[in-house]
Amino acid sequence: MNVEQALEWMKLFNEKIQEQKDYLSELDTPIGDGDHGGNMARGMAAVMENLEGKQFETSSDVFKLVSMQLLSKVGGASGPLYGSAFMGMAKADSHSKLEETLQSGLDMIVKRGKAEVGEKTMVDVWTPVIAALSAGQLTHEIIDEVVNATKDLLATKGRASYVGERSLGHIDPGSFSSGLLFTALLETGVV
Image (cartoon, helix red, strand yellow):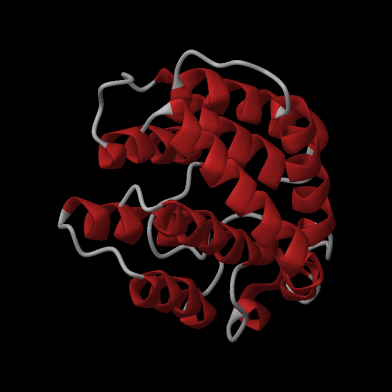
């Protein structure tokens, strides 16, 4: 991924986060603190403000800035998890395939959050999305499918795990925002 593509990806992701801010918080209200939308919107606004007018040599430089902004501006678990994801992607070799770069991001999410597939976290979206991308089969439908599948999972990690059985029937907010991230990636035309 080159610098222009990375910048376009972040621009599209920001637009989606701003558009879905209220819905993200609605998703977070029954199983979390109700602030996922506001936190992500504030973080991505800071990202866009800090990307503007700067020159970057590599996409890794873009991802490093994104990571720093999300870590410093986004509260709750989202800031550290998304910040870690982008830091992982920044550390990936700039000649890596896209799925390898994303896998580096996922590895950092797992390391930070200690989550695995099936625990109703963003890992439940990142893992199948990377698998679909590796197989050359990533589509909007697959993204929607894996995001919606979190509705049927019992949360055993993160804030949602505190509500136990009541987490069933709700889409995980971090999974939904991850879906927006990957939808934005598809829209860049890189995939």
